[in-house]
Image 1 (cartoon, rainbow, N blue to C red):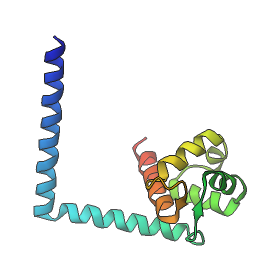
Image 2: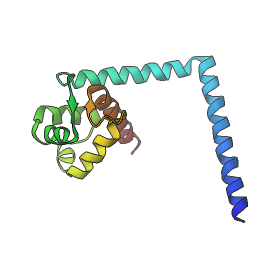
Image 3: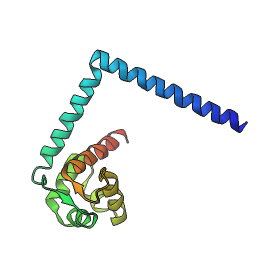
Image 4: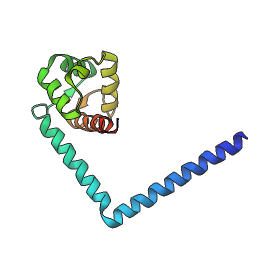
Length: 131
């Protein structure tokens, strides 16, 4: 019975992979993938513009949390960029901010660059749109 479940799970994964591959190839052929990537680049540029003034960002986890707690301008820009209310952002615990930092630090350097921050904000915005 367990072997059957494992086999069914593999079949589902293979089917999903094949569907994703077909969708990707179709997107490459009809140009829709290029349009989606272009739209994502526009969104990234818009968020970067909203965060104007923070381009030299290179924050450690403690610096990120401190800036998040003390820099009203940054908080306002994060609120605008993510669609999260200021009160919701201010209610985040340090542990939540630490996890947020870790998720955004995609290169694992232990610091958060402006590009990583913008990418992280894009992800938060997408999650907000889905929920």
